Image (cartoon, rainbow, N blue to C red; front, side):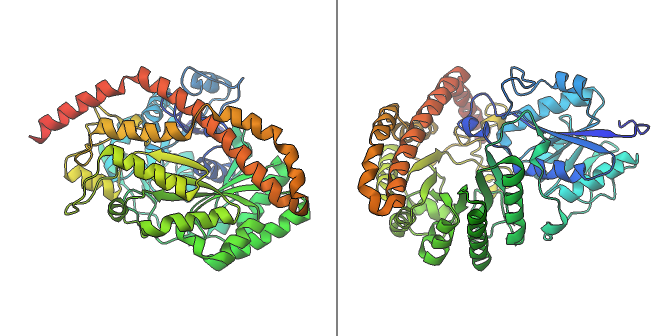
Length: 524
């Protein structure tokens, strides 16, 4: 419980560590999550609270490290927290989240958690795992009201959008509507993130996505903020933290088209005024390739990389996902992004389960060849090939639960819900082992050790830029693209190799066999 006699309190937000080594571990050391920073900033504006964010995936070499994540005993001795919040946006980190929550709970510290994992079915689980309060949905407004109630020593029954135990039962307060007026929120303050080294800054303008993909947790009508606010956030980070790299986390860049173009034009003018070129990555729909005006504005604004959810080159799988794009046009659309000079990061889901009534069979080897051929033809610079994950609360989760195909959590726990492991029984004729092996094979062919030699060869070829004196910008882009891709593919090989070693130590195949046995037993 909170000591109400204190004049000031400390709120610590913890972003839990990934389980063991994760394919995201490399990039996680350069960035952080935007949501926890936004929540921390809201509390930091309150009168009696000191706030800090600890990202266990991004700790400096001499930070408070432990064997897993941060050393919370050290943190609590050095700067005792009165309330600790936990980021549950990634389901695979939930076991670690509960572990830390229990540590603080045993010390009498108030614990709060929020994020995409905490849908209705998982709230009771959280409240029995060291969490006092669960914030449901977006939390910037919820957290300030909750902290105000805690600070006043009141039961937070009037705080909208939270769940907690009341008389031993789960009590859920009135639902809070999604935020639409973002101007009333403070700009996320990354100086609150302690011990981290941030090179890539996450920023946003639009929340929500109307595409309704079956596997995705982000739903609802897009809610845009003003382009001026996003530009203000970027310029503030440039001027106060010398930021150069940004990731616009909007699920679909290009929604509210005219305002997006206006933002790009403003960003281009800002870059000219400071005489700097920023590096920006966005997530965008493939069909935006048809909008030449939008793509031109994006290039003028130095948007460098586009992350595109191709998901699959197989028509039947796209239909099951509720993806509104045809396979036959995907290659030509991807090449348009390439021609405009964008670096294309392709995101795929291998072995997606079909819906009832769909008749389609394809062997694992044939699927693998289909993916390889598509990636080659589309000239994709970097790829991410994951397995389908039935995230809690999604349509995919409900469908597979009804079909009793999801492996028991006692065998395949939340820590495996990161897209690198099979979570359910796949469609015939595929087996879980084949799906896992095929995804690894695709990644292994794309990211190879040989690219370290091509990086060196590319460096020696730098003088050939003299042949592009008539268009030095074009020559630089061509040279840089090859050098950058070779380097990333080598680093990807290192990351993939580390993941493979961790995978073998984890004995996942034995756990998978146990899960398959238990699933078969319970479904009979």
